[in-house]
Amino acid sequence: MEGMEHLSPATRLFVDLFGTKAGTNVLYLSLVILSIIVYNLGFARKLSVLKNVVIYISLALGCLVLTILAIQLPVVESLLVAAFILGVYKIRLHQQKRLEAGSEQSL
Image (cartoon, rainbow, N blue to C red; front, side, top):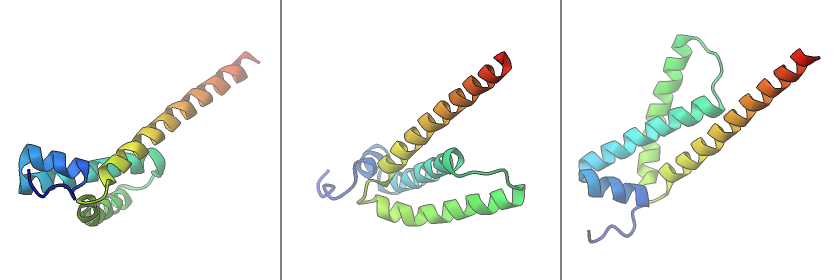
């Protein structure tokens, strides 16, 4: 399409696949989902249900601003990289804890 050179790659993909309005909605939804994943992998603590609801509502509202930024900046791609890195970190941390627990039992 003409005039889409200034859009980020993810925005261009969503607009090409779904059209302008639906593409923006899919962009917002993907930002919310990726933000929740990154939050849970990197920053989440055991909280009460009400506090979790407040956090997720705040994330959803913050993603409105991120959607505006994601039109020209690679926000979706950045969240994908952050989710990947935090996922690898969590896997390695889990393996390390399991290895340490196994070595303590053998002593």
